[in-house]
Each structure stands twice: as C-alpha cells, then as structure tokens.
Image (tube, rainbow, N blue to C red; front, side, top):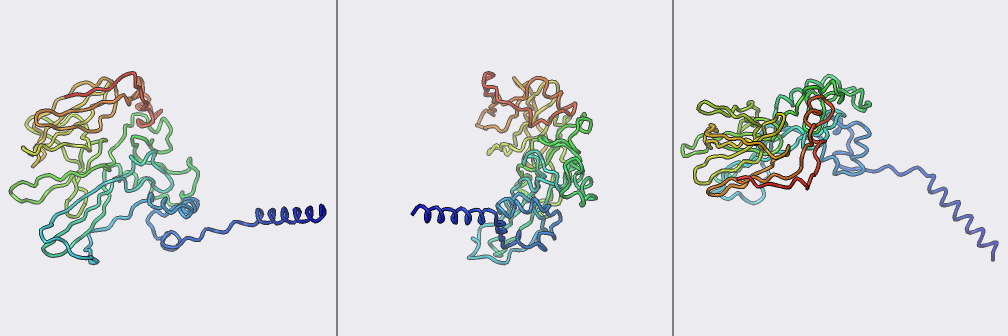
Length: 344
C-alpha cells in the first residue's frame, strides 16, 4: 500500500515537472495585430518587444500611433440620417504617445489629432476625416526621428528622443544640458473650438486647443493645419497661453477663456473675445496664491468663477525646469494645508 502510493506520487511529480519544463504555447492572435505584413506596413510599426506586449493584451494596440485619413465618404449607412440633421462634429485627443521607441512621459503630452464626422440628412450623405495637428512641435518630432528608423528597439540612450519638450517629457535623451532653458511646447491635443458661425452663414473656422500655448487654426473641412492664431484686439494682444476649456455667453456669443502667465510666480489671465472673429475685447490678470494649474471655469449671467486647488509646483520648481533638471508635470504635489480658492 505504502509502496504503491509512493510510486503514484513519484509519477505525479515527474509529470508535473515535465509540464513546467514544456515550452509555453505561443499566443495565437488573429486580426490586424496577428498579421505581420500589415503591422510592418504601418508608418511607425512597433518594435518586436512592443508588438509582443500588444499581442498579450490587444487593448494596448489602441495606444499605438493613429493613422491619418483624408476626408472620405461613408457609404455603409444603416437606416437613414434624419432629414433635418446637418453639420459636423469634431473631437480631439492625443493621436500618438510615442515616436519610434521614444515615449512621451504622459499621454497628455501626446501629439494632437482631430477627428471630424459630417452628416447631411438632405442628401443622406456622411463623411469622415482624421488628421494630426501639425504644430511646430509635431514637425520638430518628425524631423528628429524620421531619419532614424534603425533605432527601433535600441536602448534609450541610443534613441534620438524628442525634438521639443512637453509638460511631462524632456527633449532629446533627457539630459539637463539638452533641456536648459526649454519650456513645454503645445501639443494641441485637448479640445476643438468652432467659431465664426454668425447670421451671415459664412464658413466656420476651427481651432485646436491645449493649455500649453496659443490656439492652432485648422481648416474646418480638410483638417489641414493653418498655423497659430494670434489673439489680438484694439491696441492689445493676449499675454498668456489659451486654455482648452472655454465658456460661451449664450446671449452675446462672446467667448471667455483663461491662460497662465509664467514668471517668478504665476498669474491667471482672463480674456473676453468676440465669438465671430476671435478679436480680443478685454483681458485682466491677477497673481495666483500659488503656482497651480487652473483647469476650467463656470459662467453665470454676471460672473465667471474659477476654482484653484492646492495642486502646486513648490518653490524652486520653475528653476528646476529652466535649468533642465525636471519636467513641469513631474513637480506637482498635493498641499492641502494651502487651501483652495474660488475666484470671481
């Protein structure tokens, strides 16, 4: 009895050892990411190790660089478009969070891309377009990385890195001397803004917005980038960045927005603009109680309200950015003892 039990136990242990030593079964992936030829046809295909991680968890493929498309007609329409529905909706976001094997420090730094869906119920037609916002930063990244496809899969110190810095991302290989005097640049990746749609019925204009710089104008039909839009008015120009989160007065059509003025300390600049031509009507700034990020505002009939929270860059933080020792986004810390503020 004891001998038989011991024999069976020995056989079971030997079988278990054989199973554990057996080579793992390769993951069989169907569809796009399982087709090597289709993956390699991408403008910036993932390196083998990255591709293997995508095949382990297919959702990771959704974080790969998006592919642009010129405006195309949508022919596969199920049902019908309501006859009185006519217009265009745009959305924006980070279209790519890596270039070759260099990855941005946060997807909020990713290069902006705009999607556009147009519907016309009268003609039962629809179209779609997807385009990167070709900011100065986007073009700088292209120039820096395009000549070096052979660095795909290389060690970090051998990669070309980024041509310009982001809020969470240092330029080049991230050395302090490569980032000395460099401030974050604008990815134009957060929100679209249509304007100029008054009673005249003219062609609307489109802006791509992000907190990191001025608005970038884009052709509303083709999504081709036209360039930074200068915000000015009679005798004045905007003195700050331009937030992605604006408010529109439903009575006057005026647009209210804000931006940061960076210096030894931070100030909040509030702007009122004409909703037809984006002419700057007025602006006023005041110092913030600490160096923080102001996200959005609430507009009432008589007031514009901003909430500042103690999510702050500590004293000396800006100096670290200027001297290339740190990226802006990595310096923020929660300081509840400073309290929050509501500013009207």
